[in-house]
Length: 116
Image 1 (cartoon, one colour):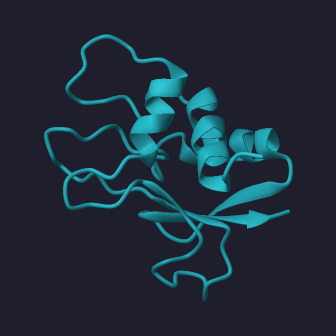
Image 2: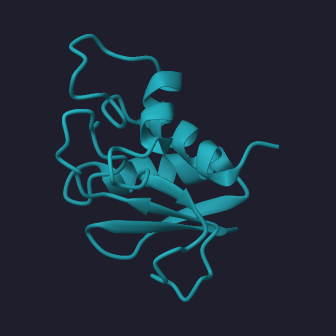
Image 3: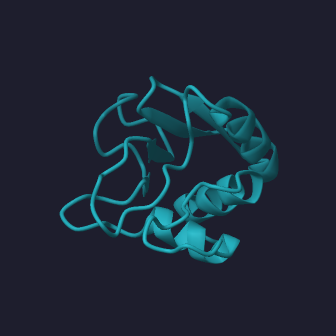
């Protein structure tokens, strides 16, 4: 089975046409490319979707953490979920896609993934 962070990235890009789209690319990227962009560290910054709860947002209880603040580097991409946009709808659809995990927002900049 794929790592949870990859499964989450794939579920999100399936339900969002912008998530993971590289800023430096003018043509729309494939879902596979966009998912990879969300999983790739950018410069000195970690990936947008990481395994576990490395920052302790939920006392180490998350299967994965989704960071939702742009990094602002030239090789950055669109954030995975928009708290003030359609992020809730995308997270619900992605959670259904995952089946055995659910996405929950911690705040406007962080979401976590829990086993269902």
